[in-house]
Image (cartoon, rainbow, N blue to C red; front, side):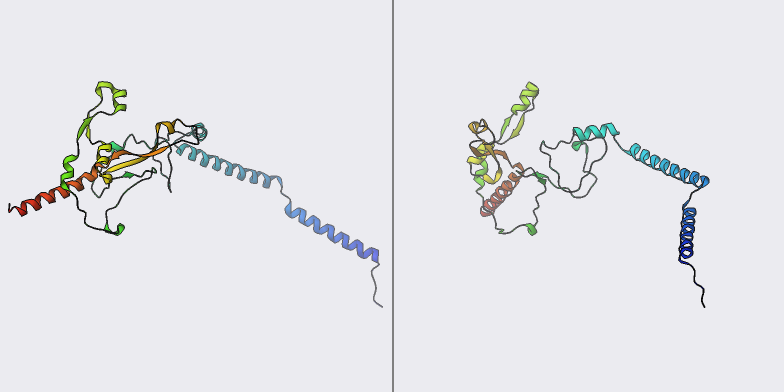
Length: 239
């Protein structure tokens, strides 16, 4: 006959085996004093390296942390150094460059005139055929150029700020150019009338599109047509 282990002895053996397995796991996970010291030293070394890295990054910055916090709280001028940004930025108060006239473009290569759209966007206006349609030859009465009145003047703001030292300028009067029908030479601006400007926001009252400036560079187109008309008259006279 096959001997059988009494149930009480069988369960006692299982408990003993489980207890031994638990002890083996505890022994495998137990860290003695020397292991703990080595682990602590490694952690300290990592922290020191991290502190050194952060210190190097802070030292490489143009601004100190208090200055950065101040800029975040009260944004203003950012200097010195170069600032670049991807995408399009908006500057409601305008853009000022104190060094633009110290930057010479005499190093060679193409350069273009920059314009400002009425919505404030700055950019370049191309003249390539690729960007144009409905192209036709333009006819212009060269006698119109004789009606343009070139004047000398001083800007009101300049006189208020500089007094007699304000420089005398040479130019045209936008309203006079407009009255001659040379609208393509005039810059117009949508502004509020005097009464409209006094109205309570958000209602600003009456607005008007008024002459504001003159596209001086386009006068060269008038001169081209004028020179061509003179050449045509000389040819007709056999001169």
